Length: 230
Image 1 (cartoon, helix red, strand yellow):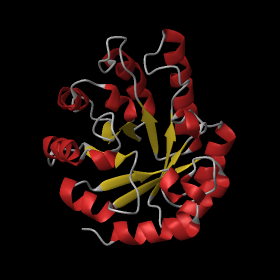
Image 2 (image 1 turned 45 degrees about the vertical axis):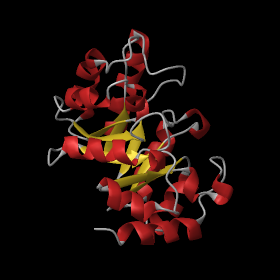
Image 3 (image 1 turned 180 degrees about the vertical axis):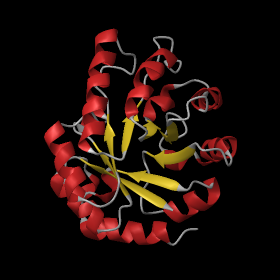
């Protein structure tokens, strides 16, 4: 089992690594769902931790439908993130009609330099996630999908999550379950859905608040639970 933890600063990154995180999702603006962090933080985190650092590429939080100048911004950010030595990119884009924006993917994915790419929770805005999964399978650069399996918290979407895991099958696309997962019930969730990777943000912070630091004890307890699962 792989556990990914959101980091918004160096303190988060170091605490997460020291207490059982397997991978970081590095972002800023956590209360807005995550935006692209500054290049200084990216370079510092990549140099300071040994676990993989995946970096959010999201220019604003207005929507997941991006104008050409937004895509241009994302392209420049991706090139800087690759140069900084990150292990992965986290991105997503939708058309105004609510479908996956394949034109945006075709512009951005060739810039990722062979890094792994996570399609983020824009996926949860899709009306037909099974159709969306088939679309993403066309792009070998995309290695995982971060999803709660719909618009509800992941913990309330066990059947839908299991369906996505089954649809992905043994293909190269991994379902990364996130949003609304807690320490309580996590082992049952993993067993019932078949997910191999889980993603945590507020659940591992003091008071379960997005704006609080990571609680080392809470993260270590959760990591121990997650890592005992096969």
